[in-house]
Image 1 (spheres, rainbow over the protein chains, first blue to last red):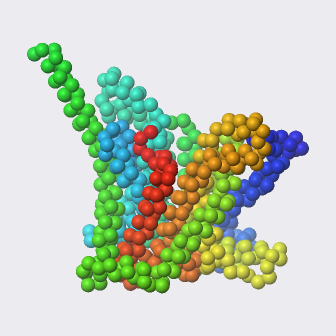
Image 2: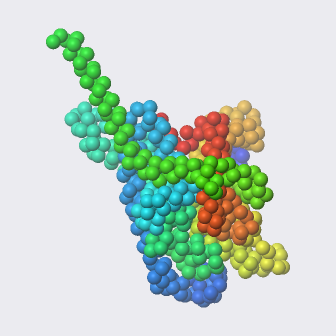
Image 3: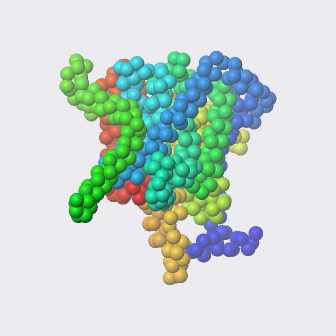
Length: 272
Length: 298
């Protein structure tokens, strides 16, 4: 212990002991970052009407309430469906765009790339009311299709950035070699390039699902009726009162997103 | 035909092929472009048009005049600005040490510790806002613990005000600052620090004169993202502000849901968009922002 204390912590010869404050501060910040989500989990298993930590009596009451509620179940189905459909739509068109724009040396490519990443910059509230306004005109309000299209443009920037980064670190000459040996452009892409960027594609697909699944503001405006999303219903419930059912739903959502993020970490670490 | 003619013909054909290929590659992006045009560009353009229509459907600047004249709107813009600046500053104060700590860890440890940033980053913002609501409320965990250890005797109002909003927003925004900052700190070569200490600088001097200036672009990028995202924030102030912290995005919603006033909502949206793009544009001239967003060409 004493040896660690006096050993240099970095190239500047500062010792671990002198930097102890940094370690303590960082540890506190990290705890602060994860604590709120973690504390909600045991609270959701409480028997009481009031959220307690730690719960005096454990029960699955709020989970039962959630799983037996027709509305919550319908909302969950909508959210999962929208997430999967967004992933299935955004990933192929996003990967196609990333590849096309990366390989094409057309002067327009740069401009188009910027256009495709702007949805991450434009305030979501503006996208939400804009989509709502157009959907009213063409009858897409409260439809699953409208929700999926709007979530798709929110997911595209992520896919473009992740896949372009992967393409940058990949040597496109390999594809040229395959084509020189007689493969068509498509075959060369599918058999040479695609396998080497597949982990980035999987990562971006998972994040596309999460983008849709967690999204609140667009869903608030363009989803509704039978196609209300989980987040929309949760937000409305939050404005009224602190319903412990939300703690149960939150726990389920935390488990889903943590699983996906850890998966993306695993895929991200495997060499593309 | 002569050999020279052949070559010229070949060159022309090749050129045509290359041009066709460039266009068809560009065409691969067309489905994505189409969706973005229909769902975002077109509607936002339409809102822009609506913002210049008065109640009578004629061209008018009344929606913008209202923003300048009305005290209520002035207060909303001021609140939005205040909350965004405070959130950004607090994020810098606690995000910088954390990113610095993470950047100096051995990579295995760093990956594990980074999860504490990534997991909240990808946990639904609604869930995290809800968690803070539960923790900060009158009979919440924080008040109970504070009273148990004697920090204060009466429950303190921690939520449904500016404090609660700031706590929640900093919590949600911190990863947006830490992740780019961490990336840029990792890119700083240790050789500079070695050189500095070889030349006789102490650790503190090395930090402030060598490391800190090199980390500024990353800090600036992260702070910029946080600030711009804060400007358009909705969910967290709506839930944790309890109606006392009204930001632009919330007023837009109210204009539509309560008053069905599309002109007023659109004008606010246009101002919000122009502020956002203006800040990003100004900043991208100050430093090369396309590096941060990961531009298409390397």
